[in-house]
Length: 170
Image (cartoon, rainbow, N blue to C red; front, side, top):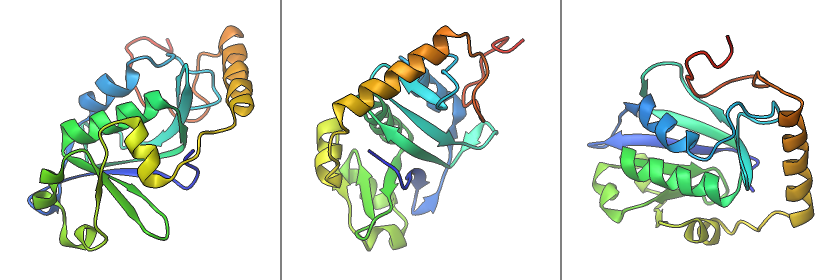
């Protein structure tokens, strides 16, 4: 489980670069409950996340917090792979995770100093970061709270809506 934040940063030619917001929306809306329950920014059947994202069309970085679940991790890895981004998980070791070692030639030098690991599956990602699976009872309880909130007809996100859905809140 991620509590301190997970950052995705796009880079090319050793500089911060951007990718299109539509790519984020395409990947992270897949399998998401839209609208979410109001308990999280993005919710899936097996987890959820909160996200900080710029409002523009060109995105250079994202910040996820309170994130868990294989769907979230799989989407995070897909976005990193397709956007040419690294995943930074702040810790004593400052983990940098990429989906392809070839990305090294694009990494800013200050990020390369800490080294990086390659993950292509949620299992790789959890192993690299030494993430423990959350308590199944806690997961079930949170998902039940989210489902109950959705059943009550929550139509507005609790603080932020990361997807642009035409007419979603009209």
